[in-house]
Image (tube, rainbow over all chains, first blue to last red; front, side, top):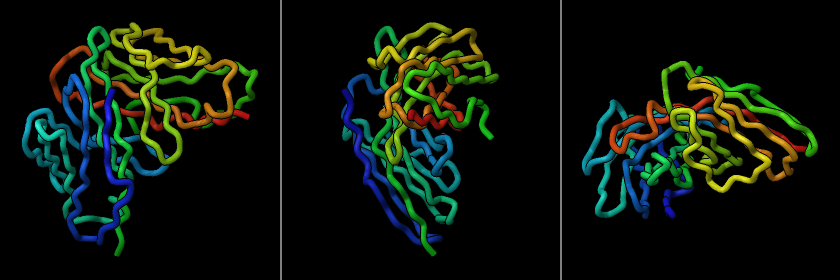
Amino acid sequence: GQNIDQPTEMTATEGAIVQINCTYQTSGFNGLFWYQQHAGEAPTFLSYNVLDGLEEKGRFSSFLSRSKGYSYLLLKELQMKDSASYLCAVKEWVTGGGNKLTFGTGTQLKVEL
Amino acid sequence: DTEVTQTPKHLVMGMTNKKSLKCEQHMGHRAMYWYKQKAKKPPELMFVYSYEKLSINESVPSRFSPECPNSSLLNLHLHALQPEDSALYLCASSQDAGERFGNQPQHFGDGTRLSIL
């Protein structure tokens, strides 16, 4: 089984930087994804980490430490449109079944003026 | 707009009805997925199809019956659902569910919002 934890809610100011943490315990780890989901919409892919270290993509960066079972998503120069739920998802290899994605509890980010 | 299309967008049905949810993708992806998402909760995996064969069933009740007629289509047949089955049903696809490595994200449709009366 898997246990994936994120803070439930965070609030930040427009223009600031926010870090959303994710901790996980899993077997068969095969990568970690971050998705953004606006209310009533589909989750959209933000970033992927499979090796330790930092991946940067514009205003978004994601970090992974496999030994610590820890990842974070860093959002810079926050904009109002960044208000959304941010989902950490662990990809697990299932023998005979393929890759399985399990989502964390999600972090609802509110960006204020 | 997403590249994974789901129909219908909304569905209201009674507990004795039979209905189907449809999902279509034309990205050449060979893996397709069904998820269930309750309000303010993350998506929960239900089924995985890899190369048109069911590869993962997350102990989903038999009142949900998936079908993959071809590599572009995925259906979810519904029968005798319960009120607690009301949720957003998301379909997703990825290039391949079989590779052990690779940064292949899953692409999600906008979902079907299902209400059981």
